Amino acid sequence: MYNLDFVEAHRTFQNWSAQHPDDAMGPVSNAAAYLFAEFDRLHILQSEFFMHDDAFVNRAKPAPDAGAKREFDADLAKAQKLADAALARDARNQSAQFATLLRLGLHSDYLALIDKKYVASLTDVKASRSMAEKLIAQDPDYADAYLAVGVENYLLSLKPAPLRWILRMGGAETDKDRGIKDLALTADRGHLLAPYARVLLAVAALRDRNLNRAKELLEGLSREFPRNRLYAQELARLH
Image 1: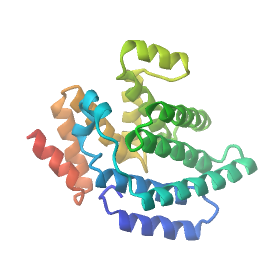
Image 2: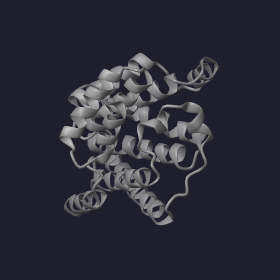
Image 3: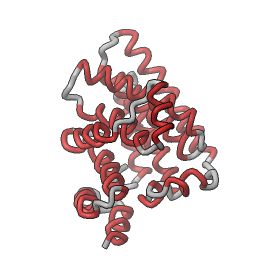
């Protein structure tokens, strides 16, 4: 999937689900492939999309693929059913907890980036972070879980000060430094989400005009995933 080969990603996730029918990680991963294929089709994955807040907010609402949306929603529903069943059997099931925070994060991304329902997306952002903190408290070495904490803190820290105050009153976390720290932890020690964390850190570096750091991250991603044309395009733009 990090090489933008979504057909092969679906095949991999579906085969894995057939071998592990009770594990929510299969359908939630397949949902991620549908979501990021849509992001790629709609040109939402380019870094400049996230560089200018006014252009981001004022953009026209994208035209989603109805079939992809049905499959995405179906996989999220299946993941929720499997994860809830697993957590009912064992509330400390780490795979089910991780699948849950992923499901919430993916749904939040769809709401914000495709449906343009920013306020509604915050509910899932906070719920995903809460589940991540529960998993981290149980296992501090579960590095992939830190991404959900980092995403909330970093993204919401970019909001104007009065809005950050309102968000914090509503239970959101808006600490930029903590956000970067947690994203870096996932980037350095994570497994499934380590490359995604490096992408987010590259965007953060670009927003801070730290071009050398952005180049370093993108060059590493390009070497690891040479078939992803976006990394090469971003590097060409920087050079």
